[in-house]
Image (cartoon, rainbow, N blue to C red; front, side, top):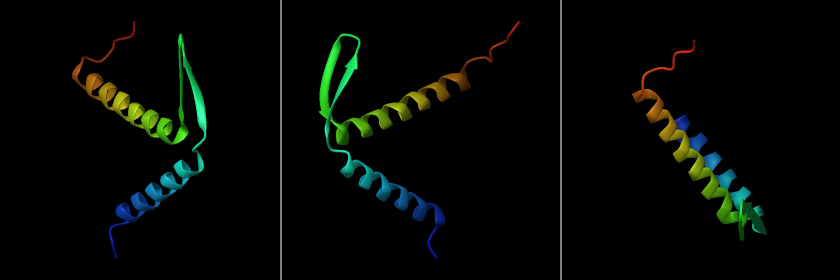
Length: 71
């Protein structure tokens, strides 16, 4: 039997691709003064990758610095 992590990862990846293929309509993204129109099939992975990068950076920065002391 194969590694269960690989099987779960494959199932999640397939479900994510199906989710993307079902969300192809164009949406408007407003951020302060900017307005961007793009397909959800592009927007969803961009936001996912951005969230992973921000989480990774925050985790790395918080491990290096001294712990916060609340008074």
